[in-house]
Amino acid sequence: MQDLAYWQAMAEKVTAKASLRNQAYIDGCWTDAADGATFQTVNPATGKVIAAVAACGPTDVDRAVAAARRAFEQGAWSRLPRNERKATLLRLAALIDAHREELAVLETIDMGKPIRETFGYDMAEAARTYAWYGEAIDKIYDEIAPTAPGVLATITREPVGVVAAVVPWNYPLLMASWKVAPALAAGNSVVLKPAEQSPLTALRLAELAEQAGIPAGVFNVVPGLGAAAGQALGLHPDVDCVAFTGSTATGKRFLQYAGQSNLKRVWLECGGKSPHIIFDDCPDLDRAAQAAAIGIFSNQGEICIAGSRLYVQDGIYDRFMGRLEAYAAAMQPGDPLDPASAMGAIVDAAQLDRVLSFVQAGKDEGAGLRLGGEQVRRDSGGFYLQPTIFECPSQALKIVREEIFGPVLAVTRFHAEDEAVRMANDSPYGLGAGLWTANLARAHRVSQRLQAGLVWVNCYMDGDVTVPFGGVKQSGSGRDKSLHALDKYTDLKTTWINLT
Ligand code: NAD
Image (cartoon, rainbow, N blue to C red; front, side, top):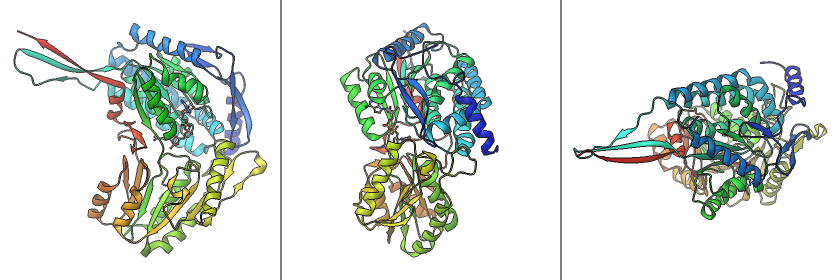
């Protein structure tokens, strides 16, 4: 991989005024917000403003939705033969791949995550997502129902129409791609609203989509604040479906918006407080300790499936914690553009303050601070926090119950399997869960009992585009990734034909 100087030079190049897109992309045109409003996007590694970006409001959202509807009705994309939609999505995947370095740098300076992740994972995975859904869409058949003779009943999948994708800042391009790729593959028009902390890669994606041949109006990007652009999409009477990733609190608002407007379908990928359980018979303590550290400290802990509650059984507790501490201590935050950095900067000052308030709450409520807890690299002007581990005497602590979305791990010791399962399930969330055991029967038994959309056995956070991703309880509804994601962006139509 290239070195720090290389990535710094590229960062200068991609943020040069001439190449940076900072307007909305509506109906194939770049445009300021109707009222001229902008918001600033800041580099979390330095605290410096990168650009002022169009802050779209209801008027801009109206225009984008109208363009999306028009394009959908005209059929240049929605009725395009599937193999041609496939060819376009494959071109988009190839373009993302060809611009992978530039996109990775843009993402890193916009949200603070290490270049080794944006280049090594996020961008590669985003490209794969468009390729995968492009490849899938001309291999899916419709159904004929087993009715009586004299009737032909077909069950066909149709695109829902106008899809609004509203996404967070922690994996800006990848979260967008998990929604945009299947929605476009199914023939919908899309209006994407990136998070206000990280709009830049979404805007670059629009340029690449145009270059790939996606017709005007089919894909639109409306950067803006949640309470303005996000709410306008949620309440819009002509949006057929909202695919949302973000906090549970905002997810609840989208359900209300739907109720107040047109009962649009709302799919939610929300927050998590995922339990990670290490049993005494863990087959490899070293690997488990490393996975536990990566599971909470990578991406600065800003991961919905972060293993933020760790449960360690009595018999291995001390040996395991020593290893965990060593792996965690090695993940100190550094310049996100430095390929040696395993952890970067927290997304903004507000999020850093929020995470620090949880660290304080842990101390105040009597949790034992075992590692970290301090803000570091203040001279940089950026927002950095040490990897932090608390040992928790009670499940009632705020740091055990609430999603922190930062590099803070709450560890609890347990004695029996039942106790671990009970504590793991004692949460309003149900996104991910992990367990380590050498006992196959226990692996099955505990996986079945865990209330989560994703369970990992003897690993943590692994996966690819072939498997569904999403949660139960207040972690949301519906699934991203895999063929099942297409269920969100299509409706079933029954056509009953009387042949007699
Ligand atoms: P957020 O809910 O604040 O924002 C998410 C998106 O919603 C942003 O685009 C934002 O502008 C918009 N938004 C905010 N307020 C809004 C409002 N009142 N009306 C309409 N739209 C509004 O979340 P965040 O801070 O950007 O992201 C962190 C959260 O996302 C965490 O809770 C995390 O667990 C969750 N997340 C979940 C998944 C998953 O797949 N389940 C993945 C990544 C992140």
